[in-house]
Amino acid sequence: MPHVIVKLYAGRTDEQKQRIADEITQALMKAAGSSEGSISVGIEDVVPDAWTTSVYEPDIAAKADTIFKKPGYTPA
Image (tube, rainbow, N blue to C red):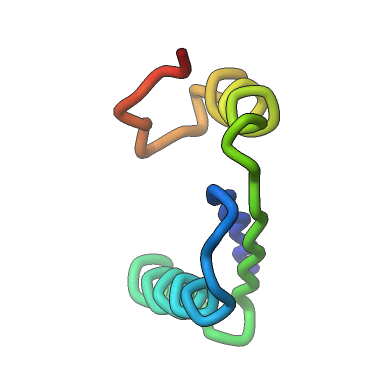
């Protein structure tokens, strides 16, 4: 039962978000052998000024041991 939460800078259209969800679903079906009906994908908009405090610090820095694709940046 994979559930993926994607956090992005605000501004993507619903069509773009749907394409992201569709692509993630296909990748999980292929890589994890999950069935389409078992996958859910949430997409959360984040304003740029809040990225460090609401995403980077709690979801990336604080959980570094769970990050398999590390970002190529550090917040200013």
